[in-house]
Length: 198
Image 1: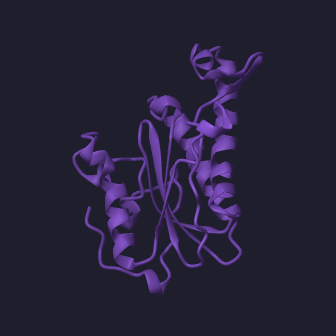
Image 2: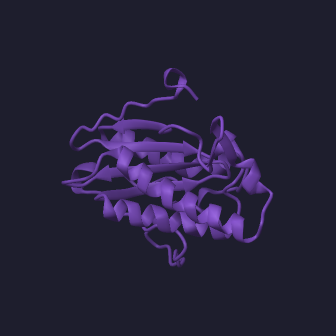
Image 3: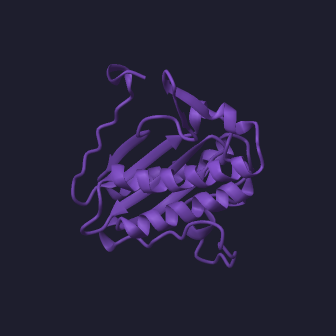
C-alpha cells in the first residue's frame, strides 16, 4: 500500500486523558474465536499495559476486533508503542502456531507488500481507532459501550456472559476466576463514577 493511501490515526497524547482504542483483524476476518489465541492475546495485553505504564480500565475481545480502554500512568509510553507491544508478539505467536500445524490460514494471512516481498498480517494495517476521554461521564459511556458490544452483536444475552470481556470484573461481588483474561485496574479518584450497568 502506498504511503499516500495508508490509513493514519493521530494519537493525541494529553496528560490525564484516557484512550478508547479499537483495532481489527485483517479484513475484519473472524480470527479471534480460538480460546487458545484469546488467552495468548490476554497475555499480550497484560504484558503491554504493565510494561508501558498504562492502567487497563475495560476491554472486550470480539471475533474480529478488540476494544481497550486505557489510562496512561506517569511516564507512560506513547499509545502507538502500547499497540505495537500488544499486536506484534501476539501476531508472531499465532504465525508460529499456524506454521506448526501447517494451517491453510497461514496463506490467507500472508500478503504481498510489494513484488517479491510478503508479510504475515493478523491485524488490519494501521493504528485503528483512538478516542481521547476527558471526563468520568465519557469514561462511563465508553465502559458501557465496550461491555455491551457482545450483547448488541447477539453473541450473549448479558454483558457478564461474554468470557472475553472485563464486564465480570466490574461486578464487586464477582467471585468468578478470571485467570485467562487481563486484569483491570482500579480508577484513580478523579475518574470515579457510579456503578457500571451490566
